Amino acid sequence: MALKSAMAVTGVILVLYLIAHMYGNLKVFSGQEAFDGYAHGLRELGYPLLPESGFLWIARIVLLASVLIHIYSAVVLTLRARKARTDRYQVKKRVQRTYASYTMRYGGILIALFVIFHILHLTVNVIAPGGKSDSPYERLVGGFQPEFWYVTLFYLASVIAVGFHLRHGVWSGMATLGFNKASRQGKINTVAMAIAVVVTVGFLLPPLAVTFGLVS
Image (cartoon, rainbow, N blue to C red; front, side, top):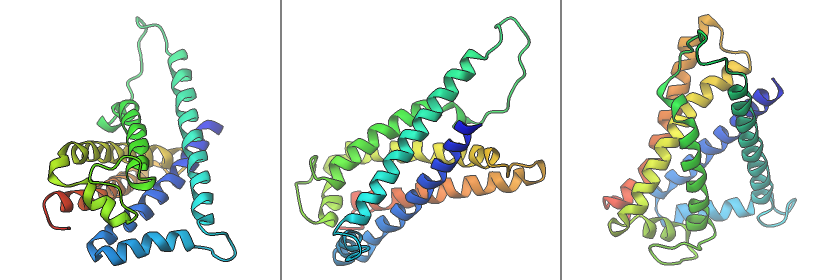
């Protein structure tokens, strides 16, 4: 139960981060000055109580700890479930599973690879398909130009995987935290689907807008 609770709590932290990050990304539609100003504002958040970029480093540490705890809990619970399986010739109780639950494992691997690429591309400016720049706006716009369609395609596949992960994760997290009563299942499914769709669409809009020339 402790590991399931850890997965649920860290999942909530990660969902809240995704929503905040998605909102920030949408500022690209307000132009370079607004987007770069937003990025600079994050570095100044909490200053002078915190040093410059202090808030960002605290957030990164919390996120990293949440990701590691989330992955550890998922791996341990999966191994325990395998160990607890009955003999293949015995009658097994069928459990309702959504398509999202089947894609959690491989989707999680894709997401992990994407996070590494995303940080190297748009955060630390090591991978620069469109050329290196000190401007977050220019890095984003340059990285999703039509000639770098493979970057956009990888981004799209990864974000869709995040959507599936969210759909299943929000539902199972609510169940772990005790919200999944029979009378609430319909509402919980709706909430899980709504969060997954909003986050997925919100993250897909900026790169697609750049690729199709709506943002330049």
